[in-house]
Every structure is written in structure tokens, then in C-alpha cells.
Length: 499
Image (cartoon, rainbow, N blue to C red; front, side, top):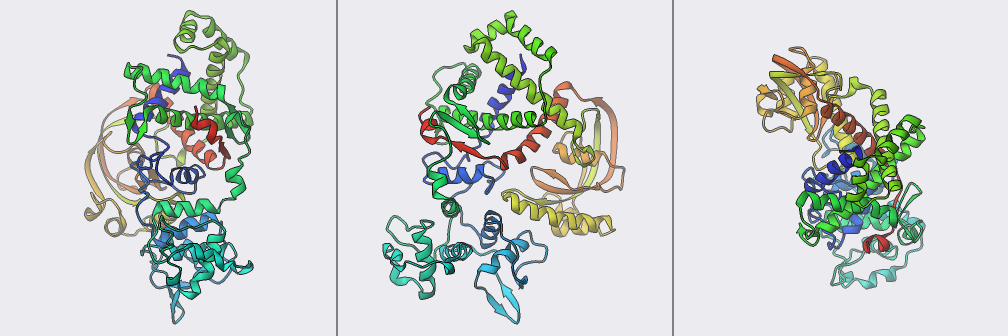
């Protein structure tokens, strides 16, 4: 099987296990577009199980983290001292930033933020209004007349509600009530942040009417989108051995919609990778071009064109793109500082046996990227303590999020190789007995601090070619996820919805 089809197969099988759209935010959900816009822009994130939990309430510290990063707040006044924000808490820095725009309880110079309480609608309205400069604009107080519960508004709150309403940032419920004292859900909060975007940007995206996507200014035409979409559909029909699957639904979305959305996200990521390859001047040499042309002219290439209804030019395009991405992966892998990676390197051998290790886990599950960075800072402080001789078991008991080991000093005994996630195991097995891994180890669970107690290695084996390629692909995907966050993606919604 040629490489581009291998790439398609991997991506396609991913549809079964994950989607870029959150599993609990179906297309018909009222905030679907808003949540997905913020997610694609790297402003919000979901949970490890693929959900967003849009109806859950949001806490004051979570609001502080999103608002600080969205508005890129800086410290313009002396930092406040808080009596209810634990020192080293991941949200501590964000709370200090947003506190510049909030009225807080104060007692002898010590303030109260109430980080773990649920945020209210008036909390958010006042915070956003102050950041946007409510005091610098003339307020149209008639804007509050649209709310049926306006008689209940506190006098000091009316300015903020009027400002936020006249800007179109917050509105009332289905009964036209503002409900200032009510808590706010994750979906409602996303809607508010979404509404802060420039209306011009939202209503008139800079994209040609005949383009489906624009990725950093490079447009994808309808024909080009349908090339990839057609391949995905045919491959999916082959996997399920059926042509009548497209109207079947999974969690409120048809398989057709799921595959279309997955195709869109794959096109975006691959195009960003190809743009990066061009930036690094990675090109196909004459020998590689001849190899692709020879394949297209072969019976295998001809059969591929027949099966997938491709022209020879289309097959050349697909093969060339797959080869360029592969070369980009090889190039990036060569330049990675592997001493800071916890996974195995492609030239290493896998160890077979058992080991015992202690670890401290600071979980990042369900946290945004900004929140995760704060957790990382806390983990680095703990790692420094461990390196300086602090009692590892005691710190694990006190700080580790892993309920399976934290009451046992973080200890897991006689673990078989292959049993734990690769990042954890590779780091642990690289140590000598009694040694502490010198860096934080990042896994899907969060940040680990690891100490090896003992290991018994019975044999070793070399990595397979498939395992080596997986390491390179994972490295590229990790790096390209950062590229995606800094990319400008525009979707022609009218054209996309009608595909």
C-alpha cells in the first residue's frame, strides 16, 4: 500500500476513536460554531475523554485563566496578596492579572478572590466590560430596557450590563432576562468570549466565494477539498464494506458529517505541514519525482487510479504531498533535542522485564493550555525539591493526582514493560536504580516526576520499522499542533455546509 493511502488509513481509523468536534457538542447545539471557533483558535480545550461539558458551570479561577490569555493581560499595578489562593496554585498568576479589573473583598491588605466558587453572569459582565474600557465610553443605559428583570439590577451594575448589551457581547435568555446573579456555563462563557471578536472578522471572513478553506492565506478550492473527501469516503466504505452508511448517526452526527469534518481537519494540518516544508526548502529531488512517476505508470498505480477514481495528475499530487510530509518528519526528527523527549528514540532497543518506580503526577486532564502551563510550573518546583533531596514519598502523598499510588508514596511495584504509557515507561527504564529522571515527563495524564526503585531486564529487542515511523509521526504531530495554534484558519461556512 502506498504511503498516501497509509496516511489516509491512519487518519480514517482516527474517526472511529476521536473527532476534532467535541463528542458532546453536536452540530445542532446552540453554541456549536462558537465553541469550535474558540477551540480551533487555541483559546479553549476540552477534556481527555473528548468531551467539552458545555453545560457545566465555570469557576472564577477558570474564567481568570481564559480571560488573561485571550486579552493578553499584563500586570499594570502592584500585585495583590490573596488569602484564599494557595501559593503555587496553577491559577495564581492569572488571578493576579484579572484582579486589576475586579472589585474584591479586602481585609488588612489581604484580598479574597474565591477562586473555587462558580462565576456569575455579572462577574463576567463586569470583568469583560472593564477590560474593554467601559469607563472610556459613553454608556447608553437604554440598552438594559431589553431585559425583563432590569428592575432587579443593582444600581452599580447597570453601567456594565448596559455596556455589554450595547456591544452585543451578552444577551438575555429566552424570556429576555439577564439573570446577573446566576452561574454561567462553559458554553455561555464561550459565547461571550466569541462575541468579543471583531464582528467584521466573523461576518466577512477574508476568503474567496469559491474556496472552502483558507489556511494562512492559502485557499483550498471546492474541487481540491472534494479530492480528499472522496478518498476518505471510499476508504470508509471499504472498511465497513457498505455504501449505505452515510446517514447513520453517531452521537447526533451523521457519519457523512463526521467524515467531512475529519477531512477538513486533516487538510488543515497537512497543509500547515506542507507550508512548513516549503519554508524549510524541503523539496522532491529528481530521483524521487521519477520514482513517483514510475509508480503512477505501473499497474499498481493504474489500479489505484481506477479504484479511487483518480487522474494521474491527482495521484501525483497525493504521492508528492505524502513524500514531502515524510521528508519533513525526517528532518524535524534529526533536529529534535532527544535528551528532552521521554519516548524511545528510533535507534534504541526496547527492554523486556519488570520494574518498580515512584512518581508524582500533576494532572492536566480537562485543563486549557494556559492552565496546563501553570501546572507545569508547579511540577517544576516539585522536581527541584526532589532533586535537592526532599522526601519523594512524602511529596507524592501530598501532591500527586494519581489515586492509584499517591497514598503509597507514589510507588508502583513489579510493573511489566509495556503496561504503562510509553512516555512514563521510557523515562523510568532509562534510569539506574535510585535515580530520578532529570526532566518532567509529559503524558496524556499530565506531568510526571519519576524515580526508579528497581528494574529486572530479561531481554531486549529492536524497534520495528512501524514503531520507528510512529515515533517520527508523533514528533511531527506534536510540533504541528503548535503550528496550528499560530495559524489563521478561515472556513467558508456557506460552501462547506452545502458540500
